[in-house]
Length: 265
Image (cartoon, rainbow, N blue to C red):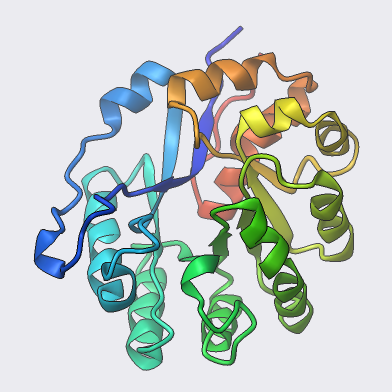
């Protein structure tokens, strides 16, 4: 079998969780190419720093976006990037997202549900959704725990109903109730999920739904496994060739603007 074309739809730039001030942060400088090549990953979508409790989360959204943009510039063929958003600096945030997406430097926006202290459906978040809907750029929402998902899921429904033209990509944790995921997919045609192969393999109900009905609505993400382990797990999932190709590559390519690749044989 030919090596599958795989896109990791959410690789968060790692940071030290003990950061207490801006000067403690070391810019992301890792070259991902060797690891991608050795594991079979041909594309990566970079998201900003994943430290939801770091002070940088609220005070450095512009720096985080610049960091992602600089990383993408080093390998524009294989990397795509998402911008950060600061609901306390709405005007500035909208300007840098608008400029970066229109210039083709970034592909959409990213936020962690836990960072939205007023909720994902708060008034301060709506300018982000409106801009991304206008730009036809996706918004990626990540949830750190099942408790967070259960708390914020009703807010996701409100946002999806208020912005029917917005592509909303949900990155949920392992163990997320598949029934709640399927219901969202059935109700809202612009919602999709970023799912690790470990999660897909462990949930036969959701795996069956992907195979039969939702193959265009689920994209690969390597977390929480290494890329090599994630690829090995993905190759063992009981999906048809067409469903596996959609999950591993096609959906990520479509959503984030990667070039098409040959089909898996």
